[in-house]
Image 1 (cartoon, one colour):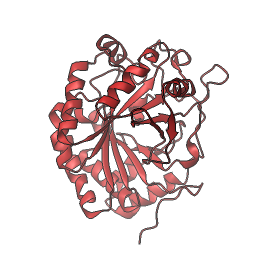
Image 2: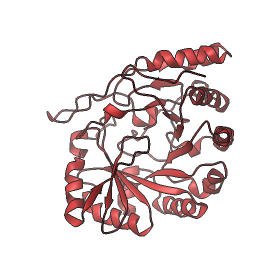
Image 3: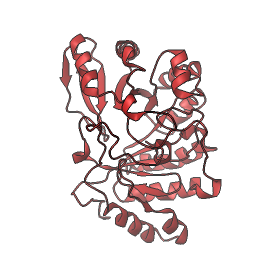
Length: 334
């Protein structure tokens, strides 16, 4: 039996997030600069290489695989990769295959995703206001995303909305967003903005809105009950008693969640980041391309996991962006 992946702090690595492209059809202000320079195609892992990489992690004990980008559904022939990964669902080796998307392509792909075994998806949506949506995404088209959400629900996919809490931008939509999700039986998770990448004129301290404040505002409207539920990610969940809906909070800044971290991230170029909030990474593309032997790739993976840190260094407490990492969120895949 293959030995599982255990990091230096005795955490089993069971959750892999893989970016399949750095490209996106939006330019969200907390994720990308407006005029991004994208990677040349030769630097990206091919779909076949992504298959081999992910399959190696599944052999080593990964049970949840989340596909990210950029926007994963803009990668050409991406459904070929999803169909290939579905074989691990069929054997039971992989428990969940899912993705995070901006929703723009779901009208095209929702039925196909359900057919290959995807059952839950995360959709990034920071506002229900069409003008503000265009502002935050720069290039985004909200009606297209709304049609994608409709298509996902019709296809049978369980939808969770991810909303980045941005001070001075969507604070006034807290009630609107929660009520809209409750009416549609959609789960909702709020995320604190993370200090990643130089995005030009964006002020990360100015954007930061602590979820402690957001939760307090929710609690003033309705009783909140903490839930023990975990989905393999960093979110902590509550039930809103007057609607029964589930709301999550991802709080890398106001409450560090690193103690239970069971995940690593692979970029579209084959770098492995064992912590979203640290610069440290290892190259898995070179050993992947240097040898066709699975044992060599697995050895490189184990060596990378052995370097996983205990936690990140994000900190806004001194009114400076401590722990800021230089790469864009789109490079790592969220």
